[in-house]
Length: 87
Image (tube, helix red, strand yellow):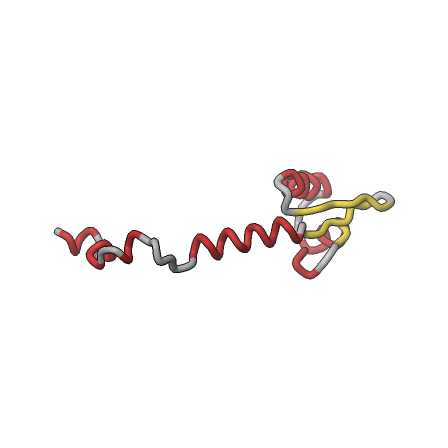
């Protein structure tokens, strides 16, 4: 939901069957790990994704899943076989 932009906690609550305290707990965890930002306005908190954190995660996942020249599998085609095939 936050990928579309900042949302008030009240709007998030409308989409999920959970209490306000449960939402606050989960959003606090996301804020503590740096993925989500929150700002207070009146009695509500507005949440948004932390663009820097999302960018770092995206880069990490691309690096993790991209084909690399230094991959151990490139050195030996037999490494690609399953365990049963080696027996």
